[in-house]
Image (cartoon, rainbow, N blue to C red; front, side, top):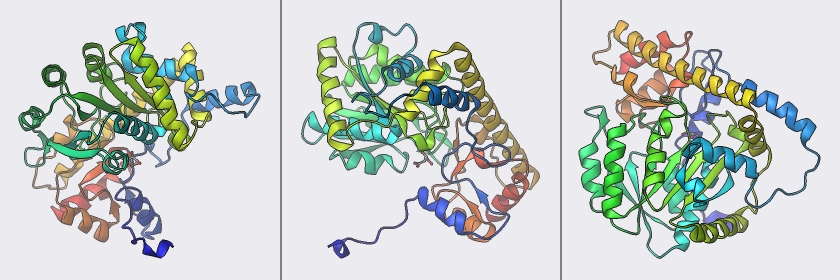
Length: 396
Ligand code: LMR
């Protein structure tokens, strides 16, 4: 039966990890898949998470199913993190939410829910966007359109072009926005630009679909929530897909959240039932472990403080790696100024070099990153930065 199916090309991001593993060059450098790495190149279990695991081992007394929506403590803790302590929409009981299997699971079930809302639903995504957005959202049957976002020539956001395109949207359209730390470019909207997006959403009536996978990696946990909170508090409806993969380091535990802010609390009840039925039709209920850990951390003041300082540490380290790379590129005679990397945020940056240059640096120097020129900043360290800068300069 399956011979009728075509052989697929490797995944543009996950396929890089396989190629990296197979490379026998001992000086190889992995700046591919977006996982945080420490100075030794390890992706550690965060200390707050390790402590929560000990607590959970003692506390967990059964492996029976968890409820269809997931751990309520996890959902409440995450919503407070995203929407703020004094969120009006939370107080008005206007937020339906479920624990989801990772950010991907959240994106997919929200897309399936949107597909239930009408025929020919259209989602506008940034150009470029995370490589998996299009298959995840498109496979739910939604039509994808793009809006201009990043301009490689000016090495920044083309906000005017983005807004001009979004002016063509209307009620019933959905606009996917990255809450912070845009993947793949690292170029984020300023608060003033978020204000403009809010005005346009109010005028045109489009539905913002916010994907937030890197809260705390940009400017800080509170600062990074600016756009999410602004839209959530000032629009009748917003949907949010959140991930705990990066800021809790729970990659393999598949821990995400799908939230739907509705106009009224009566609609919230409908949305809650619908999203649970979408999940039931795909995977029934989420895995327990990751959500239970986040619940323990967010409910315990001292663990939460420890987690927040670990997030701050990761953010500060990535910022210093950016500075180090920019300096090393200049020291090694780069014929271009790469200081734009210092203004970008989070785990990723676009180097703004061509796919041919990316492939050349991969084949000649075993430096692995996505063809779009997206690099995982966290893969840089004191040991590899010199070789990395030299390799990049050699292909400029
Ligand atoms: C990435 O963008 O590299 C990560 O979010 C991992 C993935 O699933 O693509």
